[in-house]
Amino acid sequence: MTPAQRDALHRLVFDYLRHGQNRRALALALLLASRDDRPDPAALRAVAVASLAVGRPDRAIAVLDRLDQEEAPVAARHLLRSRALHQLGEIEAARRAFRDYLDAPDRRVAA
Image 1 (cartoon, rainbow, N blue to C red):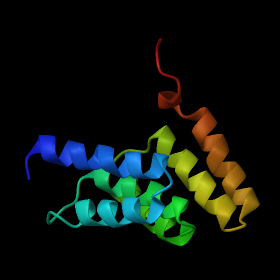
Image 2: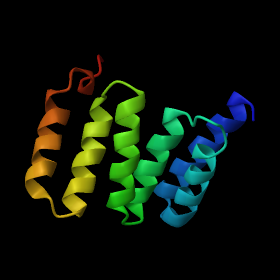
Image 3: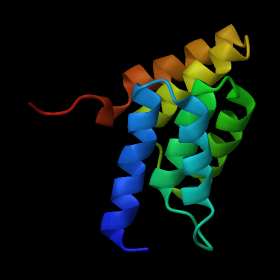
């Protein structure tokens, strides 16, 4: 798969999510994540977002944990973890993850 094709499929995942086609988004994200021996972090992030959209915070947490091992922490991942923990009813852990998001240096993008 060429990089342009992969990018188009990533956009399609988020288009599906934007239009309420959450299960289709998850299926496509899982397909993208399983395409290579070592899936790219963008595909794993798409799986986490789509998992939250279909009400599978447990899957989202597992994917976020895997991403934590493969790349440096980023603000968006803290926010996703906060949402997943909140869906699981782990309110204090969700608050801590949200505080990590607020404290993350990459949260603020220069204008």
